[in-house]
Length: 409
Image (cartoon, rainbow, N blue to C red; front, side):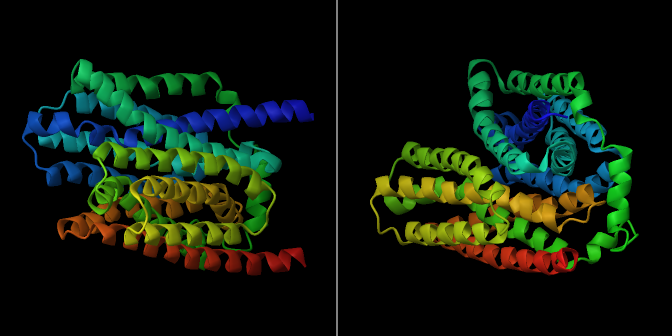
């Protein structure tokens, strides 16, 4: 295949996988965006509404670990198509709910659909994108997720405000339907890995462990899991209570505090774009992560101290998003290097279940801090968890280099 055709193939696969990932993140917040309508409709407390989102992420986290095995057995394309279809069905189920139990079942189904994306996406990117553009593929993958997070509340509140929440969810169900149709139209680009390559990969890693669960014995896999768990707890603090904390600490309006979070999201997307180029030109991905999260931790502690004016707090939120975004592609490349050749789906499924676990646990911790009237504690603990991420990155990087040394020799 010549360079031009290879570039087109890479671009097509990266775009298709990015659309699928954006759809997944769009569904992360469909219930949170509709809280102003769901609360009075069903007479629910905030704790009951929060439990719906916890169920979503718990089911997704457990499902991700299992989905990795299914991806390695059935192929990433089939599993990805199934996950997108489940998201659409879950939105239809939620739109027709007339009880809290039905809402819970809809959240559970959405969590099942969401569980397949990381193991399927990363397997497709690793199999179908050339090594030279893989860092850029990871970059686009992360950016598309941020776009999904940003667009979902805007879309749902816009439709619900002009019609009702049930119509908003039915409209949301059209997104996975359209994406699924597009992916099916381009299914050849997402075809399973050629048998010859799969066999070669299996032979290359057969010496490590022939068991389907052998990768679970690798220390580096659990270090990767810890990386995602800890970083997701910090992210959950930013997503759920950063804006509320900024209002208390700096006396700014809620609109300004919300704009600070928006600044974080867009700066994170910009950081991921730059991080794709940075990661592609580096072999020391753990060092990029160390610098990025070390900087983020220091900036979070400055925010906690409330020693800067309110406008500067908005800037600092953007800088935190920028540096953490830069680390995204290097993070994925680091985990790719740690994964056995014949267990990509399983490894990404297990380690990314840490992300959902952190997103489920984080709101409980930071909510308790806010209930105790410690808004500065939110940013203190965000900074602590960002600093702890560095320890896991160092562990992953050192273990990967030790494992690679005999092959290099």
